[in-house]
Amino acid sequence: MADEALLAGPAIRRLRKRENLTQAAMATRLSISPSYLNLIERNQRPVSARVIMAMVEQFEFDPRSLREDEAVGGLDGLMRRLADERFADLAIDRDEAEEFLATSPQIAAAFARLYDKAGAGADLFDDPLAASRREIERWRNHFADLDTAAEELADEIRLSRGDIGVALTDRLRERHQLSVRILPAEVLPDRLSRLDLHARQIQLNEMLSPASRNFHLATQLAQLEQRDEIDAIVQGARLEDDAARQLFARHLTGYFAAALIMPYGRFLRACEATGYDLPVLQRRFGVTFEQLAHRLTTLQRVGQRGLPFFMARLDRAGQFSKVFVGASTARFLDGEVSCPLWAAHLAFERGGELQVQFIALDDGGDRQGGWLTMAKSPVGSGAKGEARYSVVLGIEAVLAGDLAQARGVSLRPADAQPIGPGCARCHRENCAQRSLPPRGRHLSFDRMSRGTTPFQFGER
Image (cartoon, rainbow, N blue to C red; front, side):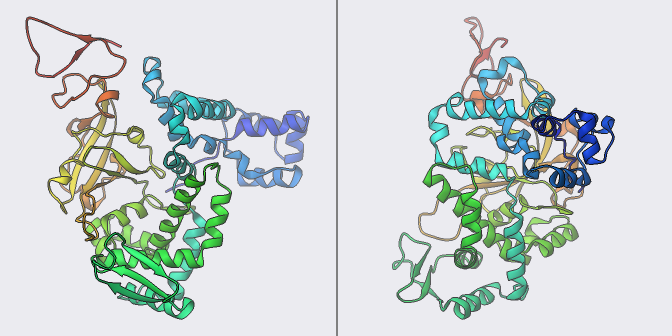
């Protein structure tokens, strides 16, 4: 897929004003025409690599400042904040938000900062999990240096051979003098794994599946061999809370482990060759459905991009315990709960079966886009008392036509299952599944008759 054009007019305009230059003078130093510079500053032309290099050479300039939208998590991060019900009457659409972010990124960053501190409540701002998720969102869940390091290590230890676990075990023994020992469940009743430095052992619960065992071993290698790289990324994050930093570091550790088991180049080639066939990819790389879903959200290497999937994990109450938007535009994941009409909930009743569904976000009759989603409630690692979750993978329907799981599924807009952003935020009328009235709407009552839905409400 082609890389998106970089529009950074406001940042370049501020650089010119900082240097106290006219457009003509700056254009001369950059070896471009004043008219071309004018178009760049008005976001009517993207910034080319040659112009960026000229700015680096001519001025004290950090190219990273061109991506000012990352301060708010990009367009998706801004839309997440604007989806607050307190802004519902303003009817701000995605095009307006995109224009605002492109023309006034600093003002957008100021709005996001105020919203995070007070607009959504102090509890959200102080929540370490939310802070960690925002940092992952800022990176779009793609960490190129970790991918490269994992790919090099996979080649070094020849991880493409049949038994991944053997290669991981050999590396731990030969490089780190650590043996792997499988212990009875009663010895590790409340642990999946444990590092015993005294015995020089990595101890694994016998109830772990082979895929989960391999992932724990890969995670241990990440902690041993990528600690400096992971610490450097965490130190550069905008996280003030120690718990948030620890959560972010844990995510990066798991990221490297997944990248080691599913090396970028080989994994992407397998995806494209199979039409992203999920069962085939699971079997080929020896991973769980959740591990595979995680990995599919990360394929954003420049010049070697995969399809932009999102991934979410739901509990039985419909609450999101994990959300990775990646490079997708899945803004219906902004809330804390999901719509019961989504087949992601049906997955709990049919454990281990893949539930494929074409959905469209429909909030009050304004249907927005369409998504092919694939949900499964895995049987788990096998540990006693393990919680059940539904793991969902999704992609925009316009990109899903050639996927293996799209075969036999109608992707016509009229055939999409409309869903909302959770009952309290959903303004869709005549939904029999509604359990709560929408916030900000006046309820209406008729003593003479009763409708088929539990709540009737008027206009916004």
